[in-house]
Amino acid sequence: MATYKIAWLPGDGVGNEVLAAARIVLDKVGFDAEYIHGDIGWEFWKTEGNPLPDRTIELLKSTDACLFGAITSKPKDEAAAELAPELRGKGYVYSSPIVGLRQLFNLHTNLRPCKAYPGNPLNFRDDIDLVIFRENTEGLYSGVEFYPLPDEVRAALETHPKMRRFADVPNDDIAVSARIFTRKACQTIVRDAFAYAKQHDYGSVTVVEKPNVIRETSGLMVREARAIAQGYPEIERREANVDAMCMWLVKNPQNYDVLVSSNMFGDIISDLAAQLVGGLGFAASGNIGDDYAVFEPTHGSAPKYAGMNKVNPTATIRAAKMMLDYLGERDKAAAIERAIERVIMEGKVRTYDMGGDASTTRMAEAIAAAVAE
Ligand code: IPM
Ligand code: MG
Image 1 (cartoon, rainbow, N blue to C red):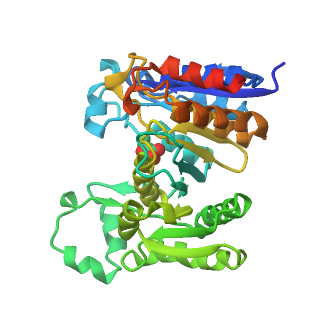
Image 2 (cartoon, rainbow, N blue to C red):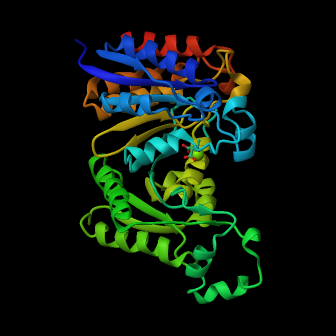
């Protein structure tokens, strides 16, 4: 019997190709796993009205970790229009399965390393080494949203004096998305960020919020961060507003180490940071909870490249590497990292985004070959 059981969720679009590429490298390092395929994504939305079927949730519960590819998601009305005719008008509402998985399994910590590989022609600078900790289950992604505004929600909101400004606006002219922060989730993400900084010798942790305007939610995060930072006197605690942070990340990205933020702000700064080190072809994420984790490339399903064997699989191969770290397979993880570094440094095999013409498979094979050397 294999040592590990891994849930294998390619999804759709380029998800299949990038997961197949990661598999080439995982096999080469001798990772001993049984891979169990799970249904997820657009196809299951269209045919079952649910892009995250219950059988897939059960599958995840029986495995040690999950590798996830990518899925197409579309706004509410477009999604409804693609449902199988017999499912239409029955109240099915599309919601992102990856956001669903994060919440269902309480994968509270989204870990997004953004490190420039020496020799990558896409680097904004070569000395960037950022690690983003994004809260992964609440904030603006809580899904507590209203449109039109129900009377009872309106009544509750009207206990706040600032609602007076909206007194004349009818319910069907107001949409509300709640930004919910809990103390526990704030503490968890900040603790994880500081513990990581300590373990990996990073000098600073920057808390990225906007407490001067979004006083209550961002304020809670910043207060908890100040308290937790006291336990880490050797690590410099910094604070930045999210808008200014975007500017600083373009101006002096080399001056930052670990960044920690809430769900939506973390989503935004992680795309910015990804582009500084080569773009989404390089950016990987770990969605990590107390007893389960899902690893994925940060990119989407890129439908226009689907089936072309063209996209850069490095992000997914890095996601697989992060999964090995999570499972305690540190030597194998380090071997993958060294292999990626070497292939990028040599520059002989490059996918289209890096100005080359290597296919997804060819890039993976080159990394696999470098593992063996
Ligand atoms: C990400 C993605 C997802 C998110 C989408 C696909 C729902 O942008 O992982 O950053 O918003 O979290
Ligand atoms: Mg994103």
